[in-house]
Image 1 (cartoon, rainbow, N blue to C red):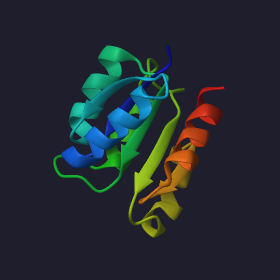
Image 2: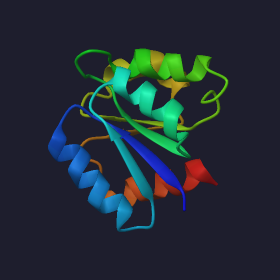
Image 3: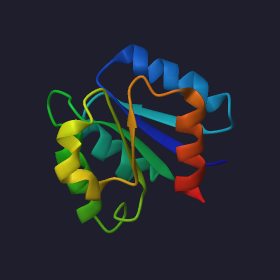
Image 4: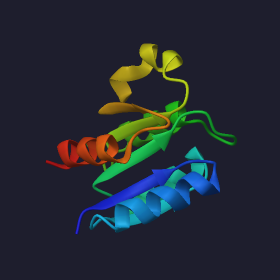
Length: 117
């Protein structure tokens, strides 16, 4: 079963994505900020990560840079999941894909399938 780590500071978003993804056969792990996301990613080694960008404690840019620098997670696809995609343009090389909130479920599921394949 493919696994997905959802990193987002909004509990509603984590819950929505957990229900959506588990209903489509994914094992889902969650974290509420980038720092926690790094810890969970290194512990669980998910197949793909959905990363919010603008979060307290540690944002998605810094968390993704940490993950890409660690050999255990360096090749894990990271999908940026954000309501503000414009600031990502200068950092888009960090991400496998960018999904703008509100991202239609079918689009997100297609991005996940492509990222894992």
